[in-house]
Length: 249
Image (cartoon, rainbow, N blue to C red; front, side, top):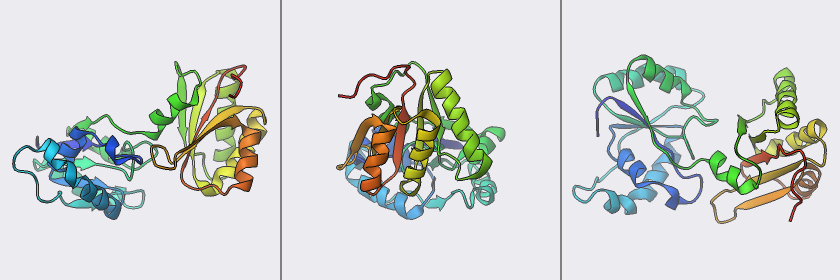
């Protein structure tokens, strides 16, 4: 593995078979793995061991590299340590708990600091709930907009929905957002107030997993469903930007 490189490595969002051979090679060849949660990443690496023989024909690694946590709470404090490590000719991989690093996950500050210090950054292609959900929607995708998680409260949240209204109603953009289970109904209520109860959207949860759920319906119907059925798991919501959304089938 080349020294002084920060590799951005996507990990499966559900189905373990979605990991790439290149991701496995990098994760078991670098000098350090920087991750959100060392326990979750440790379990992932353990589950990948049966696949090592597909990547390493000889000298199959016995163990994975050391893990270092870097998350929303300690990223700023970790930066000098990681940059110094990379500047000393070492390589590192950055992973999130699931999916592609930095997509509504920590890591931006580290990547920016690496670039500032002329450290090579490589981004591997791989799993992302954004790209997985968009084609499932059946909405036009020549142009789309990803807005991440809505702010929790206050003027930032109200401004978020006002902007979303403009993007959907005026610019006709297919728009994608994330939401947690305990805020889903609140967000659906605000979407209904902002876009109207008949606005068509797709809500996906547990993508690529055994109990994957994909619902294509109006905001009104989605609200009724999740008022009766307790939201579970993380949600990916794709909102149609079409003037006259195609009928549900």
